[in-house]
Length: 548
Image (cartoon, rainbow, N blue to C red; front, side):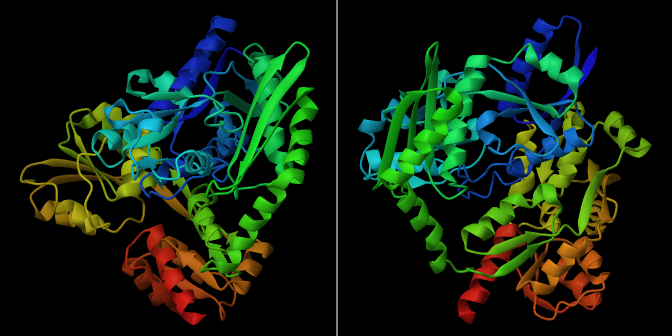
């Protein structure tokens, strides 16, 4: 092969990791052309929510779009942090290379350069990882552990701004970004056991693509692959799923491997730690059995059974968002005890048009206004061509999608509504505004911007397409306690189905979606007070909590 297309997330760290893989490929295969294509993943879209993102519970959040693009032939390779990959291989996808590992450990960034032992009682430490949180609580039960989301730069900034006294981060990401000077303390494995696969880069390709597999064989590091295989097998054999803090780290020698593994209760009060020597391909499973026998099974069972006290326990909830966007909402619902079925009723298709190309080539614009993460994903790196324009985002999810591309929004309204954007952009008389939207977008925002004196170029950046569910999807809708609609398009698709929703509570993300649903004859049961996924979840909690 003379050229490959490489898929990556758009964050600064993801791009740095991808640049490393591309460099390795070019060194191994001089003359190889590598085109890098960035994606905004569902994990990127939820960075602003502040929800905990357990490293073993968020598997797939940062990989699904890339894997879909691989299967569909849009890209030849996908670069990931290995710890983000599920332990089970996805159909049609092969792990073509595990590159030489960076630092596998964790580190602390703290105010005033304080070390972990020096943090005062009551200090607020941020982490999105259940694994880190549990070990921190075991080490320092006197500090407050608080969830933190966002990329590495965002998390460090939150320390500087005083929102957190410290944050725990993967050392590999800090080193790859060249921000080692921010680190207060590098934590060893005795203090903080890392996640399985942490610090290693994984390169996926389509299974059976021999030409690409040959390219990747040249950058595969056998020692790193053997060590991380043992770690990931430990996680898989535990059967922990997304429910428990699990750590593992292996070292490979000529005679075999040494693995240390850990399972902890979420409060850090109980920690089961095992270690042993053996062949990498059997060591992880053997130590997982030992951990289960020494008390890990009880920890895992208690965490699983805790769903009996959750507010949405045993409620059947259907999420109708496109499959690539459903995971954050699905995982949040499952953490509250819901039984979730994903039945996509719409799909999002980027649009490549003359009007879109001309808009980004025609500038200069004073503002680019983004009203959804879908719009961010559709325009991607084109934003960089408008370096003079300020960028506005309709809400925190859209803002974090922008940050995933390395773009910091100049304005995000406090109220999550498109109309609030127009009123917050300052003086617009004579300003030029670019508004990339869906093909069926509400014209109200453009009209309001024009009313304030702006010249507005509205271009279609993506298309919303109805999806008809199969028999299993229809059955899930008919058996649901609640069906969640996040757009008028999903409402239209649902109303067009020949199915009964007699028992299902129809939940709409906001008033506009609810109006569309009612006009189509759907019986709307709940409307979120805040037009976000969190708003829908809060509405469900309040409703089903009162009905008990």
